[in-house]
Length: 441
Image 1 (cartoon, rainbow, N blue to C red):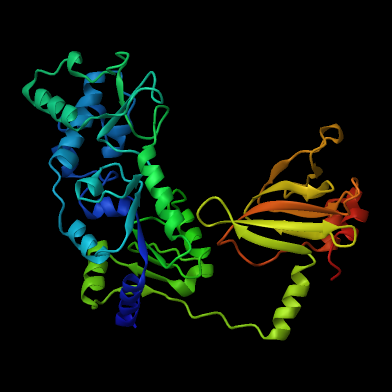
Image 2: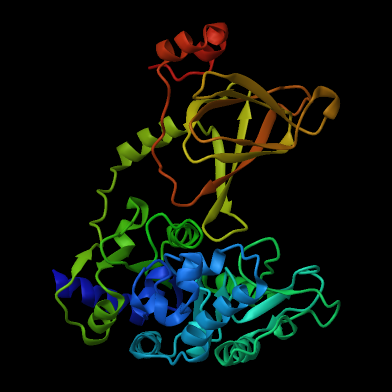
């Protein structure tokens, strides 16, 4: 089974029209950069600053609120010198290039070490910035982003020589304000050229045979992991390969098109290149049993009680879907739970009345429409865990109401409905409403 999983992953890579590589801390750790480790390397990199500030790891040093600006830039420069200025792409980067071959590819990473760029990957989105760039602390959005690579090297050399002064610290050429490292924080500025490149890549390949190759991203990473899985879920031609030792997360909705390697990245790369390896592999899952025509008809009949007339279209974000739902006097959307949170928007027709029952025992209703004199709103957000029902206000003569809702492409297809007797106990004042807008059980 192990080799079968490897062969399947190789085939997916070979057949892919394009490959989106996603990477986080696990990839950096595989290259020897562990922001969380308290080891001998910490002293090798930071020297006397470890004892002076009692740093437990590199992340402490980089996020510390220094009152001494010289020490702040000493820390930055020492980390940059070791992990960026003296960085040389190794076996991992070389193997990644072999795996990607000549296929169109893009790197999407939350790593700030700039290793992919140094490694020769130009199609790149560093979503949390890079240690090699800086921004004006006073005008981060207006003044140009600057390269810090050579500046940090010069600071490091003067630090080692004992000649570093505040005059050596970088300032904005436009206004003279101190430069800040361009990483997440109040002055962070996203690289818009990278953003546009990523947007174009996704728009070009999101409907094609795209493969997501995920490297060292933990199961709770919502920044990159969640939207990339949504991208796969929204495209039946897409595939997903994740590599993360001991911590794999593959939702059922993409299980048939996913393989997980619970191993080091290097071990998985070796297996993908050679076709062999004794690795712990998860997936692909067996296809779910297909419904008979009679079961499909019954399922559709049940679904129409909650979404009487609907269509689903691709949203504006990768993996996001937009559902347009039409209700009328005789066909409301009966009470059901919103499991992942949802934005509801008025589209056209009569105003729509949305009845909401929250987990903390609150009932409220919202009129979706355009008439502010009737306290109507164009849209609002429903929190996860809320039971809702939607009905036509029948106030403009249209005879129907249409609303749109943003939904996650990998959301559960399971519908949760309340027990009428239990809901009426919690909301006795809305008993008539609950009984009218509940599916008869």
